[in-house]
Length: 189
Image (cartoon, rainbow, N blue to C red; front, side):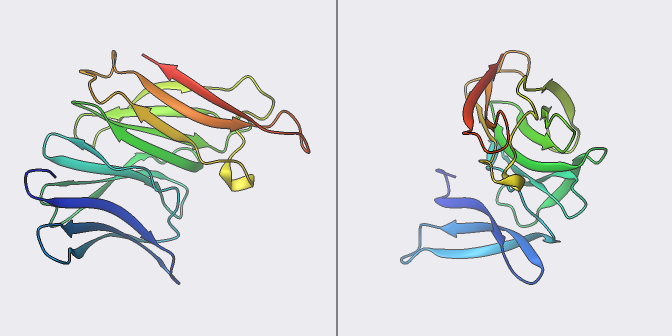
């Protein structure tokens, strides 16, 4: 936050029980001091990037039930709330970002075609499907769960609405077992 000199970062600690926390690093102090706000514990993975909409921060992750979730807080983030984005699929990966007025999350599901679904939300608690993409390659996306690269989402920070905000997903495919992989970029308006 340039106004306060505090940097925020979601951190997933690999412990006996994983601990997801939001680090608040005060750069006004010499040396800088970090404080941590608890978010969730358990078999957590697939931590997405931090985005900001107004005075609200948020990021995606996948929990131990393979549910796609979103953590959000209002600055200065003394506490963090989590909300389900989708609990009907088995999610393997997530990536998140924000435009001028929306949070965006792309999830990779464990369906036979490993499809990518992008969701949008104005507040981080209520989510709508923006689009689903089924890659034409056999097997769809080659997930990090099986050795591929993590999916990545890039969102135009100057976008003004979900219908016109350009969002791009980077994903990897593998035509057949034992073959080289291909890296793809898919952009949507």
